[in-house]
Image 1: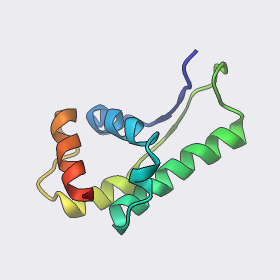
Image 2: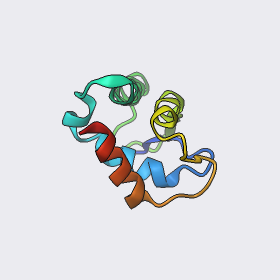
Image 3: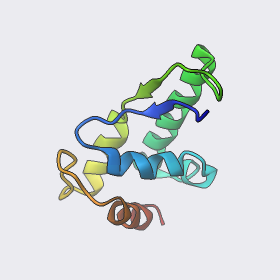
Image 4: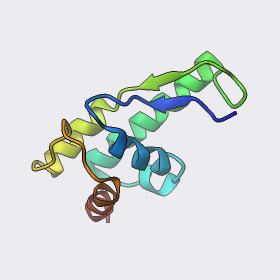
Length: 102
């Protein structure tokens, strides 16, 4: 069974969540500087704390979700043209994100 500890899909953010879930397994991204990487570190830490507190891990049936509010706020500072209330393309978001952190 897949791990069901997730980033919440609110405001049509499935396109962002798919990229953030991938980045959550890459320690290099969380190690970067700046508010964007710092807010991602906090999001990743929230996922880990929730997993440790609830015991949610592979093989469990509970499902928990964390809202990425701080990350979205930091992202909107950098990409002010990005409308997080609209459906976007995950690949284009990945390219923008990689440009921001390099």
